[in-house]
Amino acid sequence: MLGGAAAFGYTGFRDWVSEWVGRGGEGVALVTVTAVGPIRWNTADGGRPSESAVHGGPVGNGNNGNGNTPFIGRLITVELVRTLVAPWLASPDGPNRAAYWQPGGQLGLDVQEVDVSRTFAFVPGQTAVAFVLPQQVDLGYDAPMLVQIGSLFAADGAGRIETFDPDEKITLDNIGTYLP
Image (tube, one colour):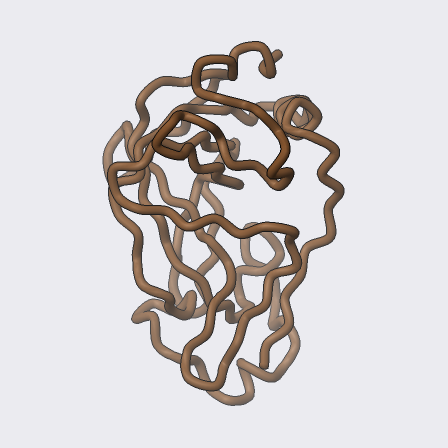
């Protein structure tokens, strides 16, 4: 089993947005999910790295400090609908496309656990709110796997945005009141 956790406090969507935008250069955008990849390793081919890589510690630094650490997750591709808080980073895959690495999952006996209060399922065609990174980040283990979305919150069919607090009532219609 793999361990992987990120500790963060979620005190509400308004604070999440404020903290994200306040870090300097990060944006928020409304996007459409265009593809949801399969659960895979963050290797060039998606396959399992060597046993020593899986069970060893981090081996150097990628752009985000974890670029040479093997992870399990899925790559989600999104397309820009409109920016809510600029900027939007153009992707090599097209100026209106971006990628989000959703950590967690199981491949065979390998499990990547994610320590968050709630996980989100994404489907192509779904609307979501993307928290845009100021630059692409290399999450790949043995080759670049570039992402530019730091977090992604799905909107359900009624337009309600799913956050870490299931009692929040943020919708696509009222999201503007939560933005700086």
